[in-house]
Every structure is written in C-alpha cells, then in structure tokens.
Length: 311
Image (cartoon, helix red, strand yellow):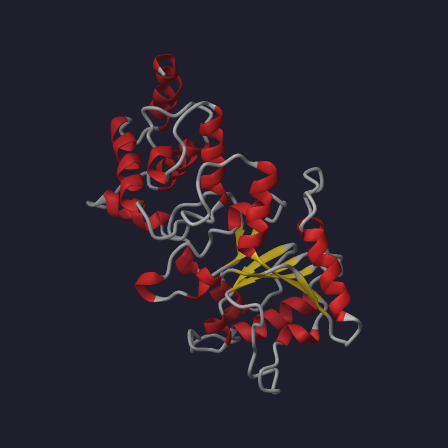
C-alpha cells in the first residue's frame, strides 16, 4: 500500500495520490528528518496503518514496533495505552498515556505527537467507563488543539478509522473530514531499510527498526546477524552494539529486582516491541548477562569494554 492523501473536498484526489505514490519510490533524503518529507507529502496530519494494533488477548504484542522508526524523525512525544509500557523502552520518549487524555483532557499535550489508537478503542469496545472522554473525543480535541503545521501522527490498524458517534454516514471514515496522508507502516520501513541499512533480518521476522539496526551493525563487523537471538549473544557482540542499551535500561528501572522469575519479567518487557518469535531466548541472554554483572551498571561497563579484547 502506497501513501495516499485524504482531502475534505473532492479535488483531483486521484492525481494527488499518484503524485505521492511516485514520491514514495524515490530515495529518501536522509538529511531531512521530517517524516512528511520522507513520505512525500505537505500534510502534517499523518495516519500510519499497522495491523499489529488490531491483535488482542494473547496475540497482542509488538504494538510499539513502529516507534524506533518514528523516533528517527525526531518524534519523541507519544500517547499510547499504559499497558504497552511494560518496563522497557528501546527508544526514549515522553509518554502521555491514553488513559490520562480520556480522564483529564488534552490541555497538557504538546506537539509533534505520535498517537497509538486501534479501531477497537475508537468504537468504544475497550472504553473505560470511568473516563470523562473516550478516544473519539480525544482525537478530535487533539486535531483542534494542534498548532498548524506541527505533526500529529496517528498509528492505527486500519487505513479508514471510523468514529461512529461523530461520523454518522455509514462506512465513512472520520479522516475524510481532514486533510491528511494515509500510508502503510511496512512500506515505510521497507523503504527506509532499503536506503539506509544493510540488515540481514527479513521483514517477516520483525518490523521493528531497532533490531534491523543491530543486525546491520553486527553485519558490518563481520558477525552473524540473520536472527534475533544471535543479535543478543553478549559474549560475541562489539561494545558499540545497540544491543547493550536494553540491559542498562533494565538495571536502572529495576534496582530492587523484586520478582522471583526475572526471565518472565524481561520477556514481558519485550512484549510491546517484538512479534511472535524467540523472545524467551533473548530474555534468557539478557538475564544471563545481568546476573553475570550482578545487575550493576559499573560491572556491565567493565565486562562490555574489557571483553572486547578477547573478541
């Protein structure tokens, strides 16, 4: 799916769509850190479809897999459900929990903003009955509050998100009311990797840019980089690998280490970032290293840099 532009009026939409689709196939300008420029649009309201957000229950995972990609464009203010925040952040960002926006309104929110909302949340099926606003109210308030030209990136599981309480016409998406560009996350990521990274990981393994960055880094060092578990073999990876960063985060966030099954803690922490796959192997590798250094940051530094002499 290429990018296409939604306009509130019927003005040669087909021509606009074709022009933006052509731009999507051009090499990205890596010197321009604006997501709209990368997509090839003048719009600042962007809708990115990631079907991963549609999954619920035991299948719900990797909801934040697009965030490392979006962070590359300087988008570090994020709103998402608190349940996604499992105690590990692969990129740093300021969080405005969806629950707080529903309860307290949007006055404290700043832009640019990335907002994760599934269609199920919009239809009210996941609505918190104690909230003052639901997600339909929140999105419309954010669109009214947003300063002109500042990005608002809505990540959802459909290219035609609906607000049945506000948009009465059957089958009509609320984005038909606004000038915006709709695009597919997988296509954006594929294009970014094509022009910026030499990753050995297939997109069928993961659509999280963080893991592709590690793969490309290790491949450049002449290391095996074709699976996620091998990326976290801390006995082999170089000191400047991005794979070390989650260990420091876990040490800083879990200084008390109160959980008996810490492997389960790490596996759950990875849940919002990883698709189905060898999460347990990665969790075990992280735990082995944390136990080796006794959960101490100084000792991790020492192992990380001294160990390089033997690699």
